[in-house]
Amino acid sequence: MTAIRLYNTRTRSKEAFEPFDARNVRMYVCGPTVYDRAHLGNARPVVVFDTLFRLLRHVYGEGHVTYVRNFTDVDDKINATALSRQEAGAPGTLEELIHQRTEETIGWYHADMDALGALRPTKEPRATEYIGAMIAMIEGLIESGHAYEVSGHVLFDVRSYPEYGRLSGRSVDDMIAGARVEVAPYKRDPMDFVLWKPSDASLPGWESPWGRGRPGWHIECSAMSYELLGASFDIHGGGIDLQFPHHENEVAQSCCAHPGSDFARVWMHNEMLLVEGKKMSKSLGNFFTVRELLEQGYPGEVIRFVMLSTHYRKPMDWTAEKAREAEAVLRHWRALAADAEPTGPDAELVEALADDLNGAGAMARLHVLAKAIAANPQKDCFYEKGVFLASARLLGLLEAGMGDWAEGVDLSALAAKLADLRNAAMVSKDFAPVDALKSALIAAGVEVRMSKAGVELVPGAGFDPAKLEGL
Ligand SMILES: [Zn+2]
Image 1 (tube, rainbow, N blue to C red):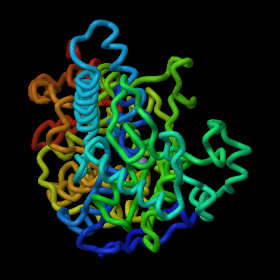
Image 2 (spheres, rainbow, N blue to C red):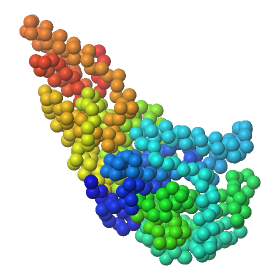
Image 3 (spheres, rainbow, N blue to C red):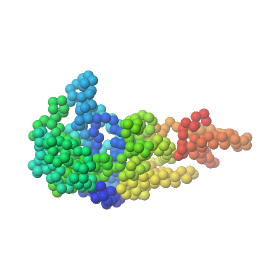
Image 4 (cartoon, protein in one colour):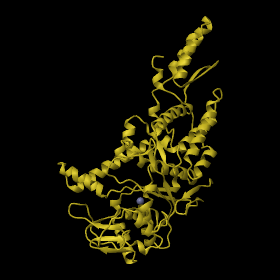
């Protein structure tokens, strides 16, 4: 069996991955708060952990991996959006408008992430379906002295958990000094965080031992991962921006609620995303959603390709130049593998992925495989193409359903024209028209292969279909 090694944020080292149960490898990844379209930065953890999901399925078997990613559908931003719709005259109660908004956003999220070739997780729980489990967990934390109730709020007492801060490597006192903490008179310590808060009549709420209210954000993931994966599971993932305070708080809640459990054995964090070298922000005008990119004509497969080309623990820079290159390479690869049947993935590529999910290394290996096939135009390469296609698909690329964007460029008519010109030139001995067409094709990035058997045209790495016009 392939030996997987993963960098564990908790221990700050790369470790051999050993699941609790190889028949059911369990992974939890924090999902989106569903109040708006996902932006490009939100897509990075989706692609990263989808690739890990694919690797785990490859190693342990498709039916032996459980991947849970939640939807946060109770949040003040969702309430605010619904409230502004109601104020604008939208019909329906606030609850109905909230429901509409979350349903709509979940639909968008699925469509956008499907377009990036991400497999749907095994389970996608919604926070509102687990309120009872959250209340039970909070009650347990109060009983064991890790949480306290003050005027309708329940807070986690960080000083009751000496390990608090271990995941992110800071002490509570450092955190207070460095963080913008919400000062509230009811908190025993400024770092104490909300498990439950009261809702007034204008907000969604559930009955609880502390009155009508709603859960804090952090408790959701602790309750849902416990319900669906158990007190100890294998991998917990998310963006580096969630490490503190969200993941730190998840650890504190879960370990105090289930003493003796590991909660997540391996913690994985992907680095942030940049756009043209800068942090994405609305004020810089470089902020965009996945949907906006798709509508601008960037295929989802191209976005995925660019994301995979950078190691997940390094900042990833999205540039228009990288996207152009990715598009040309993918066209070329699709043409190379057009008649292939996937067999098994290349061992070296699997090894790269198994080494702390080295996507950049795996992509480099795909380039090597593609070059070897392209260098042998006369050879059938049937076996090599099958390995190449299976390897690309392990990374979520060159899937049958993702290639519509690359179609529509049929080079067969131009190949026939070039063959006719060559036949005519054999008689007339005037090869100028043949050379002219050949040069124009090469200038458009087409690889021209002429042999006794015929003429073959393959889109090359710099292929630009616009330059074929008029040929
Ligand atoms: Zn979470």
